[in-house]
Length: 214
Length: 231
Image 1 (cartoon, each protein chain N blue to C red):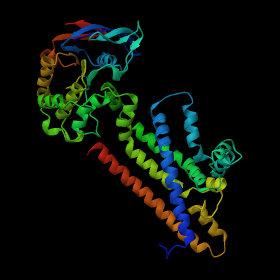
Image 2 (image 1 turned 180 degrees about the vertical axis):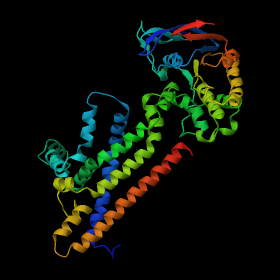
Image 3 (image 1 turned 90 degrees about the horizontal axis):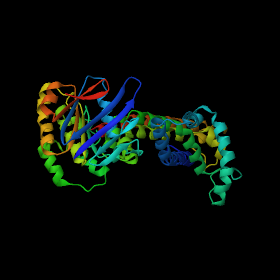
Image 4 (image 1 turned 135 degrees about the vertical axis):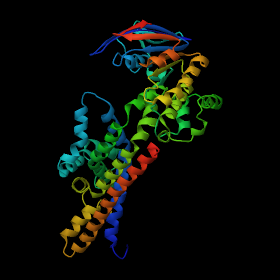
């Protein structure tokens, strides 16, 4: 279970030349804001196309300029956890959790749902709508939604930055749990040093468009 | 109602409702499609499409009616083909529905386009990352979230269709029971001595129907918005 990433991308205001491997566990990528962290994640998710490179997850090629492979976001099997939870407002919490499997035409998996819902402590929220949740609850549902879509890789873009400090300490353990129990490569982007120190299996820094280990 | 309105007045009102209903229902899929395309895609000719959609709003209605007559009349390029298939829409109520649909289309598309533009594109990206094909994103995310605008657009189009006069009378004339819709009936009553009273009654009805449609669309759009957003 690993993700290997190598790509180059020129944008008007910066240039990224990225190369790293993410084994199972949390690969934390930190760097100042505006360094291109979100762009990096979006490239992995297939929402931004790099100029050249090769991205592979579990031996499955997601992008390769050499062999002209560029899988669409929906074909990449990545679970993307965003800065803001981005739950679908017209669906209930339960429908949000299930939608990854609907979208992929997979049969419903009540056991997996039950397990994740319990792990994340959101059993009592399943019939609510996103507007009736607090920020921390929303983010937990978003984590569950990403996990239940059966991803090969988890991408998290500053998932705690929109929460107040108390909520952050509430959610951090869930990421530790993901790291220790899910055996998935998790690319975790953050500019918060404490968060990174606590979570990272591997810590990388994005500086001047390049990855440096620290 | 029967005491208050004469049979020919009732006939005109019911015909108007029928014409407007079908005009709205049948143009809705196109309105949603065009509204979505205009809101989400950049392509060569986009401004031309936008212009074509809005043209009936600007053109003199008699011009639109004339063009429809030339295209869909039994001698016209489309009308002659339809005639071979046994469908004649010129001078029939179906033609009135077509004219009303085209005249109401800009209003419908405008409301639908705006509501698609208001849908958070990041939610669409999120759905893609969760495995949704573009069609699934449209059907399960974009369209449900744009529903308030679809409702508003449909009701506005319905109200506009009820009131359509110029293109309708040019294209399908003013045949009692077939194409004499509410506005055409008002016009006819104004032409005959002693018809003023009937005209007044229909004018009041037209105002009531239009006002109700406007209020209903506002109210429904709010209701649907509340339901969609789960507040």
